[in-house]
Length: 408
Image 1 (cartoon, rainbow, N blue to C red):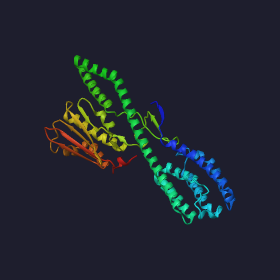
Image 2: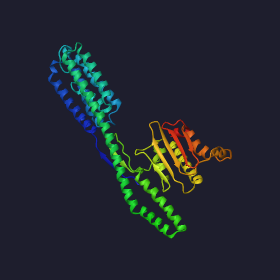
Image 3: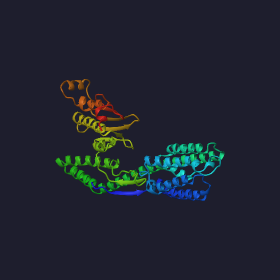
Image 4: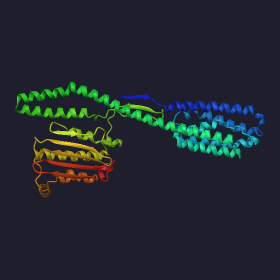
């Protein structure tokens, strides 16, 4: 299957990283100019010059690091914050009066860039951690902090946490939008397939059914089969079970949504399987299929085993209730379990017939149905009233305790 990839950039977060890059450069220039104007007031100017030189080299050399979340690693953030804290604590060594006068520290407002990087990378919790360390360093540097010191510390703390929270909200919104785009793309593809199939395959099947019924004999049987396939195909198309797209994020480029045609096996990808996809194929003129509107997700192995149990139950309907019997499949998605009910309008099962069949070595119900459900940690309950049909209720827990359910 050909894969078509369309990349759509829709990041709210990425402009913030670009703004942070500019902020770091501008605050570096500000810190250097501020130190230049105060050069003659420093008791040890060489301390200030050495630190500002290191800070300048570090800032310019690491500009690509603050270009996005992927390149801004934890190690970089740790070193960056350590440089900011070192600059704050070195201020009294360069200026002996710094503890008694409310003046700027050596890194000045450049320190806020380190805290904002934490906020953009990890959200408000990371921002709170970094700003708390900066606050502690400022209090230690002042010795006897004034009201202005507390005001500045609190301002950085609140602002960084607020920005971190905004980033988290933006990321959640982008994920929601990505999911909406996925659903929209799948809907458009389903509508396109429905139009193409209606204009070709379904019309041919309908014509075969009509001509077969008119000709009679073996042609009538062929027409009946074509009619069943037409109903099954209409059900499959209308249920929207065609997995045409997926949407993901590329952290190296910010929040990037890719819409891709995929044909990946569920078990190989490790993703959950939509049970409706496996059961919809049974729908036909004599089998009605009722499903929830949302995907019914199970582990791939568990979904296949449950679908096989449903198939075995339908085989029993065809064999024991006759070719003309009607069957109904009902899927219920509960919070903790999935329930699939298979019901028919056949003559029912006489009392004791299942035990007799098991004693004769015919283990269709015992192995194909109850055995499968037992391995999944679920249950299979069979209710039959002579003359009123048979109902098989299959229950499988969402977190399966059986071998099949745990296989990934």
